[in-house]
Image 1 (cartoon, rainbow, N blue to C red):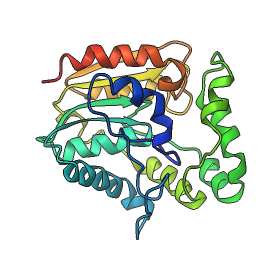
Image 2 (image 1 turned 90 degrees about the vertical axis):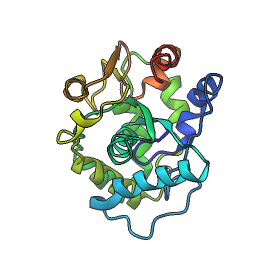
Image 3 (image 1 turned 30 degrees about the vertical axis):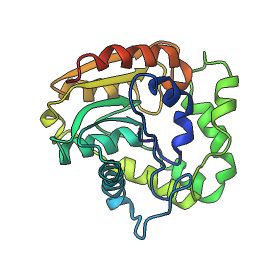
Image 4 (image 1 turned 135 degrees about the vertical axis):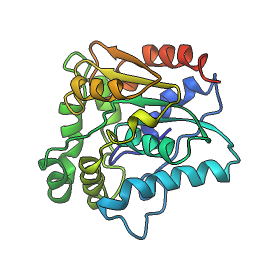
Length: 233
């Protein structure tokens, strides 16, 4: 399980517990996030590739010959890169809040660099559906960014550079894409663009959900993943 920009594995806490009843689940902190040591070079142009390699190195260190990679937002970009790099080692993909492109408003990295204390409020406001009970973002948004603010800014700048359109059609492995109908960060239109490119893709759009469907509609996300797992050899 690979988290999004400026986040950490803690965001997957509840989802990992539920999926852990079905499969062996590992949620990592990417370098410089949560409790992981930072990279020596975290320039935006190289960042997603470095995160991809860190994910692959962890899988190798744990002895996984093949793995299903689940990614949220920036994490969804990272696992797409992983499937491209190691097609024989990735059994399937679960992509949450995902797109083939990830446009980022320039105000987001600027906010992280200048007023990081306001970042949780931004995520609460923009990341969740207006129909989501406010108790849900109130639980998950505090503590963000889960990395140095400068690294969080570079995370978002790296996302803005991502584009899987040149290779997405080559990802011929079982893929489940789950998005929120009310997602304003990666819009349903952006998600649909990615789905149209993936050759073996199942697509679920959840009503009354924004960019964090695994927080907002967790039971439905778990059911969709559990059903999809039966199609993964």
